[in-house]
Length: 220
Image (cartoon, rainbow, N blue to C red; front, side, top):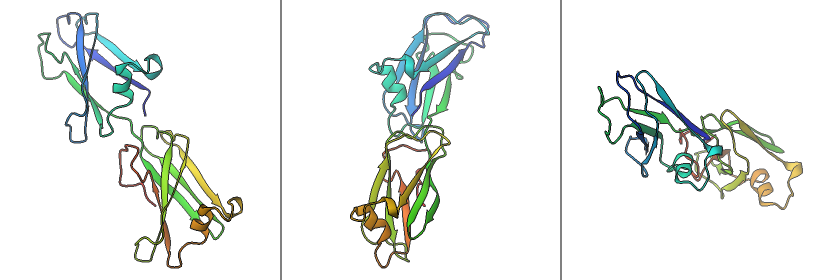
């Protein structure tokens, strides 16, 4: 998730940009094809030669039911970059019509499982967000016992925690034998695994509920 989008529209020419100044925004997939509909906006003042206008969209300042809020802060799941196009409808003659666009990467989390430690009475590991965007709550993960040949044995166990993970932060997950009721399915799963179990695979965001910068590094 993200909370703010800002950019400048600069007039590098020798004449003023007549008002209003129109621009559009379009989300793009990883292959740069559009996803979802574009959003057109403008500001009413002209831009003099050598001047610029700062455009700021702050989540706290936009009514959550406004279409702009949904466009910026809840983009399509496959959106990876945002393309911003000044004078997209070519209302204004310019010295250069080919430099009106810029792109910015969508802030996305990148979840990894780090520091796993397993003893006979305790399992602990961290789920770390190495990305630039927060992991929206809730964060799901699964655990699966594997045989020596890395094939699954027994059923997986899914769990979650309700809080978001901010960029650069992590969440410590601890399963302590003394703190879990012995009749709970989690107790059985962790502390009485199948006889042929050799390793435990932990998979963050196993159901791919959260778009990430890297979907291939979620396991340990």
